[in-house]
Image 1 (spheres, one colour):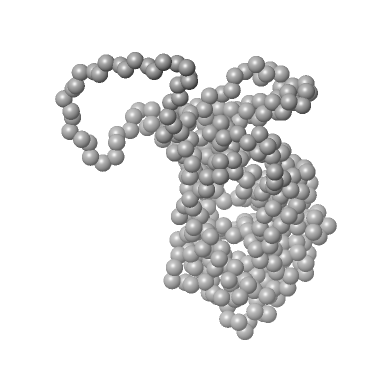
Image 2 (tube, one colour):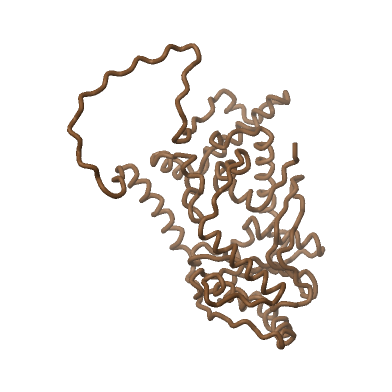
Length: 375
């Protein structure tokens, strides 16, 4: 059996919803890439071409215009020590991790500099200098840079470019090892849980769900497999992850029982497993020796109503569930600061690369913390 290897994206998906992690990792069901993810992949490809081969992004398509926005907030190509799309490998809590850093400079600067490119519709869910210290990917990439350089502080920049090509938001922070250590410890704890689940190899539908992940990041590609009812969504949102916590305790109890150890959570020892909804197309299963059920008498035929055109009318429960999800998203968006405006930069000609490098080193770094946080 191949040893389990984790990543920032695996931990992020699992902490959002264990089923969302489980369908591809346990059942091998590949998720279809939505249009937002496809937009981000294309933009990343243009940025890589710019920093590696100095090929300017095309300004006549949205992905190229967004790439130009992000370019204006980063140092130019051929900056000494620049590394693009660099693979990382490290260990947290005994679990090996892998990943890929979009952009970093580990030498030639006062501190290691690590950057990530993001595309978005708006800045409502962008990180802030404070929340960056608690972000899974940001802390993993910062810790990897610390391990490689023996430094205890790293400059981070997450650059958000709008998909309409109009605005850009660079979010910058200086993070220290002490500041990111709590998040790294929680990341390691989640990774250990995912390793234990992988060794148990249940079906993804057996894992607990969190309805908060159904609409996140453009919508979960596995919603039809979960087949949650509106009432189940509402209960999940109100429970705030309690089902996942109880399921984790039960998993630890099963492992302890097989090893002959005392149960770490004896209060859950006699509880029956929590029922989970089956997929919509799952057929009912009868006991092998039970006689077939008697067919029910057919009801009297009623006069058929004319077929309703368009989408089927929603029930009151479905309307209530949709309203609850929208109210939750509006409340989260209302707490975010208003983003700044920015101008789309032009790609610099090849002859001034050295001048741009010096300008970036002197100006960008001098105001890194103060100037960027005031944006």
